[in-house]
Image 1 (tube, rainbow, N blue to C red):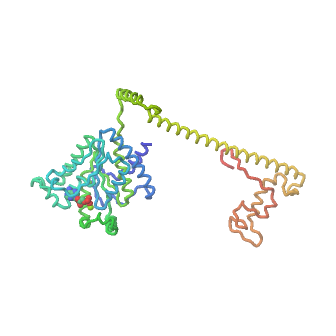
Image 2: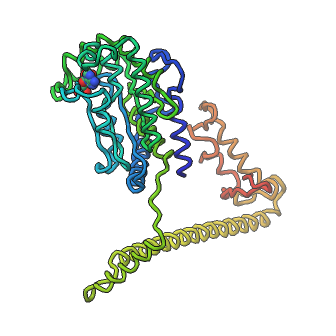
Image 3: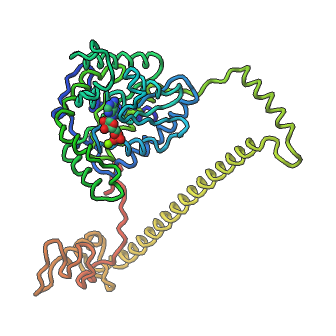
Length: 440
Ligand code: AMP
Ligand code: MG
């Protein structure tokens, strides 16, 4: 089951990964409207719930194991859906094990340090997941598109030459490798929004008063630099998707699909880490049992010795009783069904016997001629119902029947046309299985 889920997740995210070493042209290589095989939003709801439950489970293990940490970096253009993705994807996890950091224009104190300093300060401790809402990648995105940001960083002259971006890519890769080598996984998601979808979302932020706070004239100005950002993103993805920390380009035009993908990439990482609850040593177990003895001895009069254990046992008993009851009900149902089937078989046999008796009585009549009660001698009997059906499908004089319909517009074989009253008495047609098991 877990393996199946892991496989499904791996399959879903495979086309989203930027192959380390590949050269990305964002506009050509990744479609913001891609949605894999997931056809509709409602199909995606279940998928996201599965992902969220899986994340919650793995986060508990991650915390208990207290050995690995996870850093999730989210990058996107404005209105790319970073906030919503965090809100939905992390909705099932224990807030105590997650810390979200937003990175905005650096403060004076932050500008007084090397550019990675403020990010390093927000790295996760072991057992935790840290989310960077914007990340150290802003240092090769907004800072590159607007070089005045670099000037504010107070770098010595020889450190801000033309090679500064290639150097930063290398430094970032090295930093992430260092983190990975020390048990901190770096997960990188770029929410890839189309130009038109950004325009739509901006307009929504203008049109809805309760969204106005999310929109600023600066956002509109940044949109004018769309192509510069696309280029900066493409270069960043090409240079910093590494085997230890690959980028995933998340199609972001459909928020619901972006959330599924984000949850899937994070889940994939956690599954890969495979955190386990710590094993308890024999000595430690013995120690716990000694403490238990002491606690059991402290039970007040009338109270169960171990209330938790008593509750567990009561639950187990209730569960077993429910299971047995369901099993009994199923057996009873099956028995009733069999009995009913037996009854109708007996009824058939009775009807057969009656018909046979009538046939014998009518055997005295001339073959082909009807007995007084309308029944026919043997031989004619079996064909009679079909003949009557054929007659009933024939339109009465003056009436035309539509193809496949009787004169009265009934379905063939269901006719109660008067013509059929001349046929042998109707007998329930029981289907006898053929030797090969197919119904005849
Ligand atoms: P928001 O996330 O929409 O609240 O906006 C935060 C703003 O801070 C964005 O316009 C970012 O481009 C900007 N920002 C983030 N990191 C940096 C940085 N290192 N240098 C300059 N601007 C930044
Ligand atoms: Mg903004």
